Length: 115
Image (cartoon, rainbow, N blue to C red; front, side, top):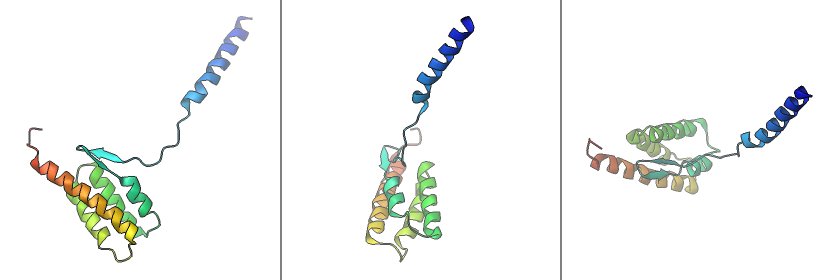
């Protein structure tokens, strides 16, 4: 009898625990760094159907922003902006992010080294 109770207790605990383990599906999230929100999902969406060269630059942008290497991100964004195969919507997304990166560079330059 005791073994049956333990088995039922384990089954009930398992049934109750399974819904708690389910993660909701999350898409890409905007990066917030140095009090600036970078809308990376918008850029990824705009450039989703581009070629491998553009995707390489997109990875460089993401990497630079993630690790605070804004000048590297800005260089990659400049390459993206000068690409002749970009549509107007893609150029708009690139330019919006370029402005955010320029703002981050300015903010980093004005902060004192002790902060």
